[in-house]
Length: 149
Image 1 (cartoon, one colour):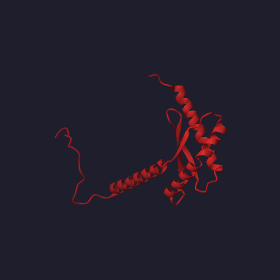
Image 2: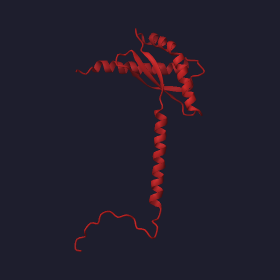
Image 3: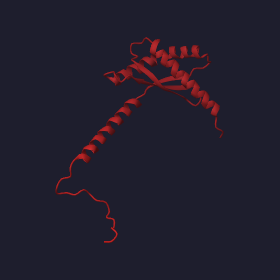
Image 4: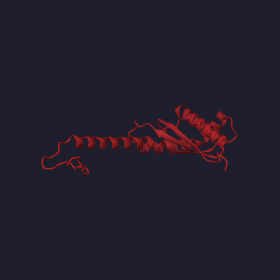
């Protein structure tokens, strides 16, 4: 089956335009109080171009991130019709994909992984710095024959 590079390039351009336009709407035009400080991280368009998933990440300074995510997604879902109308007007296209908003938690997962790795490194460093107890010897690898013995 031939590779459709032009179609993929077009979908990538449309996805990037959607990301920028929706991001600018979130920053200044949407006045719903449920929508917190957030930004669009990625837009994935379905194979037929009829649907798009919009991933939104919350600011990490919020004390209850889970509740803020749920409120923001609910606010964006409520404003979906306005967002699609504005996208149609701004982009000048006949069809705007059906939008679904999802919370992007990858930044929080990445921060947690880094935290756990740092903890492990500190623990390994402490173990390496501890002096060996007098009655035990450190484990030795396989003995290599010494020439001349």
